[in-house]
Length: 394
Ligand SMILES: Cc1ncc(COP(=O)(O)O)c(C=O)c1O
Figure 1 (cartoon, protein in one colour):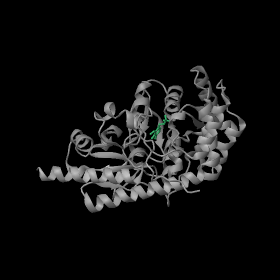
Figure 2 (figure 1 turned 45 degrees about the vertical axis):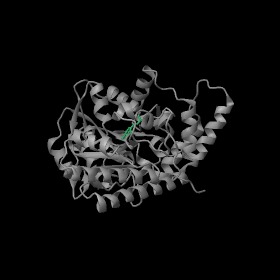
Figure 3 (figure 1 turned 180 degrees about the vertical axis):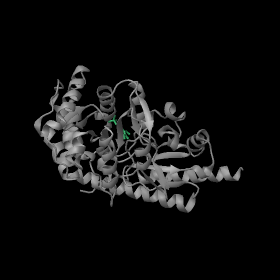
Figure 4 (figure 1 turned 30 degrees about the vertical axis):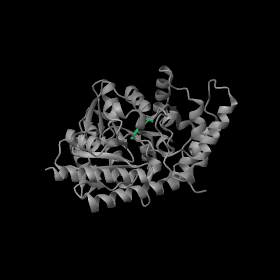
């Protein structure tokens, strides 16, 4: 079956954060929203069908994670990432951020440091600080237009009060799909220094052609024993609002601690629609995913070419995964405030500001290209026109 990603879907007035909340997120209703990381595409039809069927049942009492649901997740990991896990390693969560908060809470103490590699998903900073922990930063290195982990810097400067690292794999916002070599060296440093690795793999299913996601814990039994992995069907199949994700922990002591913390905070219960949608997506959504990724990669290519030919002062960093593009706007020589003003109010394209991803994001913007090509083209033309107006008025 061919899926049509070209056909725009009107998301206005659907209680949609990206489109209906623009006034409060960007101070205007009048901009093309390309910020928060969800897609303007309908989820795979098999998901909608399964939800409809469950909806018609009419009874929405407490739910349970059935064996078929757990098996669907295990089969997906095996098929897509060649990662064999045991059933008991899988725990539930209502989202990756809630699990990160809980993991930080359960496995570190107030005043401990949690390390991130900046620029990185802005909510990592928030959840670390919200638990009363300190953020330690090992900045990524941008070399010849490609980001890499600065592992020499990490090894030389790792503060002994760092107890945990949150690895973003693949990496939002820079779009890297980390190589086995990078992950292995990172893991070895963490193991040697007693740093727990929490691998946020929410973007793992979105590796582009030519790149392959490697689950951190699949690299060796030692890495599995010293890490916790968070996965979700949300970015993959546009199911963010089903609030259903999984945590994978092979270490029995850590698993018990995680499950106990979930239970103590009364967060362990799943929700019916989330588990129905997840199972349907993992069982029947792979062809949709293949076509969606092809479409998104086409959008990425369009942005790369358009910028190169028509707005060379903006240099997009080629992503290896995700539906996000990290735009290097430093040549424009605008402050972060001006950059936001330019995109939102002059070009009327609502992006995510780079600075929220850490100091290393200054001068950058993040663009979400999971939208119809016609909308993307319109956004690019608006950016070009606004740039002309700016240059003309200088
Ligand atoms: C790296 C990363 N982790 C977590 C999240 C949020 O996950 P959830 O909605 O499951 O809490 C996002 C959303 O953009 C993300 O990019």
